[in-house]
Image 1: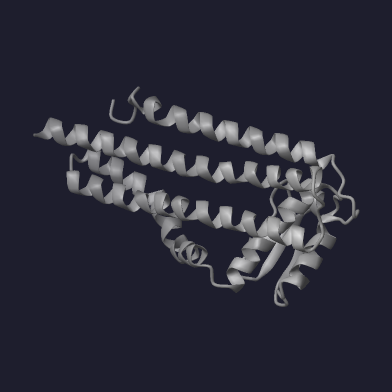
Image 2: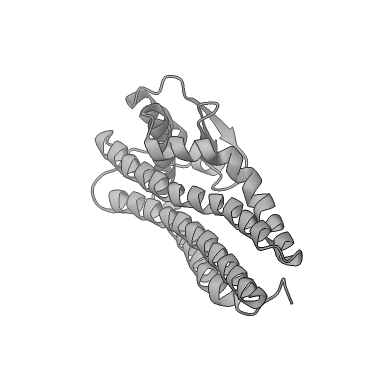
Amino acid sequence: MLFYNPTYWLFALPALLLAMWAQMRVRNAYSKYLRVPNQRGVTGLQAAEQLVRSQGLNNVRIEGTRGDLTDHYDPRSKTLRLSQNVANSRSVAALGIVAHEVGHAVQDKTNYGPMRLRSGIVPMVQVSAFIGPLIFFGGLLLQSTSVAWLGLILFSASAVFALLTVPVEKNASVRALQMLRSNGLVVQGQEDSGAQAVLDAASWTYVAALVQVLSTLLYYVFLLSGFSRRRD
């Protein structure tokens, strides 16, 4: 069958297992250090306000958002959004998450190259990630190699986006630790190592996302190469 090939799992299963492991690692680190209070007793919201001031991010607003682990920085509106569990928590985990998002705000302020490039291709990726696979499989159905290649090229924009996301997120985590230490929000020992563990665990989710996109892209190449050989 055109749309089902057992070989798919040779490409997809390793990426799927990595994604499951990464999500489990994030949840475990978050749950563990959510129970460890920081010695200064500051909440995630208080830490966010202090870090925003210390970095001179005068145009950044802080507001709440629904959900769990939905914290993010929106560069379009210059808004740092914190989930209730993080904003109200006095835990080491909350400090790590907040500092990471402030790290993105600092990237925005300093025109960090990979972040600018990633933001610039967002509209294209939103479209190509949806229509790329449709065009690809449409090309196979129509037995048109050129149409299938067009779909594959369009979908590859998702791989570029995922590739850019890895250094953006890792850089934000490096900035986060530096800010937490320089502002005295974490002390050496369990707090410092705990914040680092939360940030390191989160970074693996972006690596897993990249591997998933690349595995799908390789599977498309595998299908297309097989299709081309049959036509020849």
